[in-house]
Image (cartoon, rainbow, N blue to C red):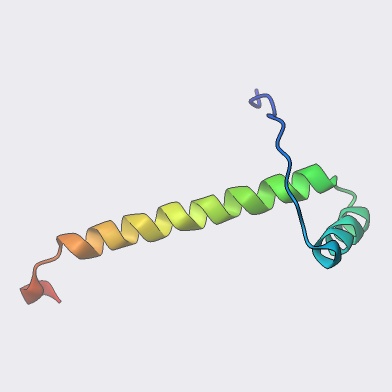
Length: 64
């Protein structure tokens, strides 16, 4: 079961918002779904980058 959504207010540039609305129509998805997916993907990328940096920082100079 999906976790319940939380309310948040975001402010987007008008061009970004218009583009997002057009994409929602073209893909038959809601703006909410597109925003949620974008934020989730961004956080996933951050987690992966931090994990890679953590692994890199554990290497000794001889391993570099």
